[in-house]
Image 1: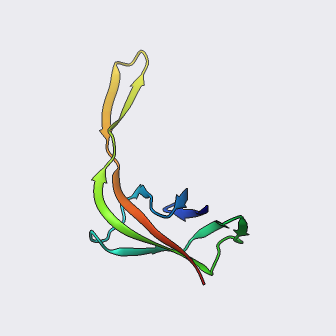
Image 2 (image 1 turned 180 degrees about the horizontal axis):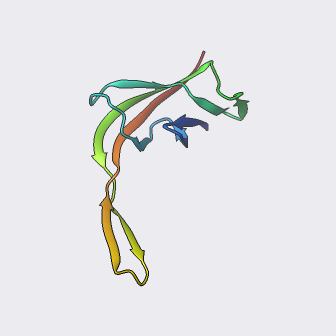
Image 3 (image 1 turned 60 degrees about the horizontal axis):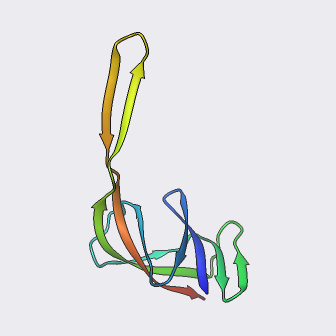
Length: 105
């Protein structure tokens, strides 16, 4: 099984080929290819490569499937005994990316 651990927008994801992942919004067009080059770890059929901090010889090719918004999270702030309440909702802007291949150069 081939997988990699990639850093994207400050977060780390365990990615495999043929699966899709929801990442923070990437300002690209639909159907466009993107290359993820911040690879921290690669498991190539049992052979493990660890970067210091990144692997320069590994590139991951993905395709932007759609732009969407995540589930709504509620933020509620209240100060006790002050009659101060604030209710706010947030929906994160996301991009769905399909991982097509993991290449070692």
